[in-house]
Amino acid sequence: MSQQKQDVRSTAVLFQPYTVGNLTLPTRIVMAPMTRSFSPNGVPGPDVAAYYRRRAENGVGLIITEGTLIDHPAATDDPNVPNFHGEAALNGWAEVVRQVHEAGGKIMPQIWHIGMTRPVGAQPNPEALPIGPSGLDLRGNKITEPMTEDEIARVIQAYADAAANAKRIGFDGVEIHGAHGYLIDQFLWETTNRRTDEYGGDMMKRARFAIEVVKAVRAAVGPDFPVALRLSQWKTTHYDAKLADTPEKLDQLLTALADAGVDIFHCSTRRFWEPEFEGSNLNFAGWAKKLTGKTVITVGSVGLDEAFTSLFTEGKGAGKKDIDELLDRLEQNEFDLVAVGRALLADPAWATKIREGRFEDLKPFTPEVLKTLV
Image (cartoon, rainbow, N blue to C red; front, top):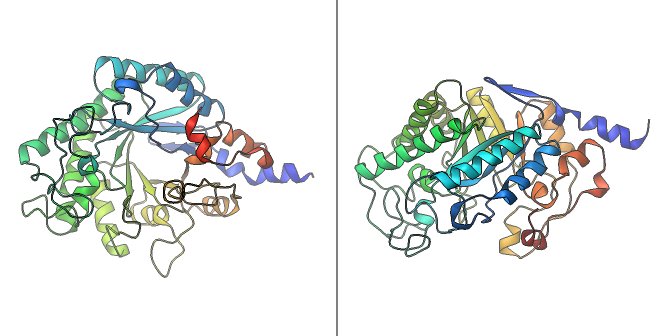
């Protein structure tokens, strides 16, 4: 047997179908959400549909779109990030869905609000102040006043409206962005949530906003539409942060979110091979699966030899890395699905090349990739 055929066989676990609820994915490979800013005035055009279609045509089982904005004036600081509200944007997304389905893939939008990471005066709505649980940035500095309970209720409804639109225009599920120091994560994290009402306090009180968002989304889409939640311990400026510093605390948080309606936990780490807690080799996704029994997605430098932050901190990209350890963990059922980010950004045919054993043809992720993003 040739070495190439051995390699093809070794990746077979990635190309098995997977079913969660009423949704069956053709492969275990997920395209991770990656902001591109290629949607002028918030409207995804034909190039966006073609971009996602290329990945579906090449064996990606589930595409999770770049972060899309709920209907709130301070949801973003970039007018080229796509909206998930308004007729023009939703029509654009309907065409994305059509093309991905035509290519044999499945797709979910990631719905998002950036909260206090938005600078004061940022476009496209410079008059809108950033919002957050306590008006604090990720360093704990006060920027604005805390959100009122009326504001909280309006934002929760905006998440629910976005999810309802996702179902209406044909998406296969919806992912809520609750990671990386953005709005939902700002409620979860004690550095940015110092409220003294029912939305602040200990970890489970800080989780109330996230739980209410999930419940509202679940009510909007019904019992059978898959709801994913992306979570991370780390923040964009605090890589060693922990929402839950023990398995017991993580169990409390994830169980409450699962009970609220989460079907899939998308567990964001910088490097998938790093253990989440001392005394166990399980990564974040592995712990989420062990504690909840829910479907989990692992992510973090899959196929690459550097964490994605190296591009921004050191101005460099990442070389190729074998995926043997990933395959071992997937075969051992540590996690169910594998999200691939920069490797798929660099190479739309990444999954096809992995399946065919064409490892030498894989493209590295370099800063130049960001100039094309095909």
